[in-house]
Image 1 (cartoon, rainbow, N blue to C red):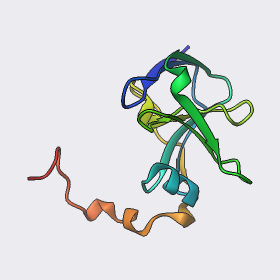
Image 2 (tube, rainbow, N blue to C red):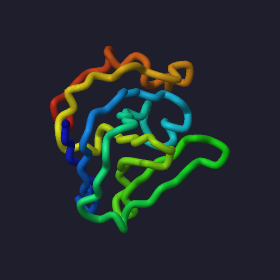
Image 3 (cartoon, one colour):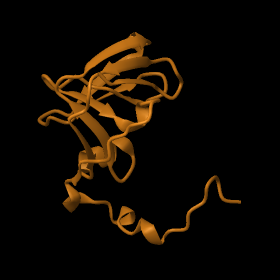
Image 4 (tube, rainbow, N blue to C red):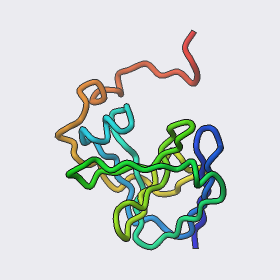
Length: 133
């Protein structure tokens, strides 16, 4: 059985996940763009993996957008995205909150009709290993 550990940015919240992920989607929908402040959300999904909060569970809060299935959990201290169990029988884990490496490549990009225009042609944008001088 696979074990992953993760935390929030301020390290108040820590957790582990036992089990495997069923899919890994890069979602370009408008809700995920607003939710992350980025071009897309990178979420892992599992119907069987088990989430255990190791620290800071009192700092975890959740939000569900009314009238939708869009929900997120986050640290109320630093705002970092955290695993969510708001949807019945489905664990949703933001890939960036994991401290362990993910061997899985994304399964697919979804809601690509909503892709942010500024995120479409990034292959032509200069790259730097750190902050440019």
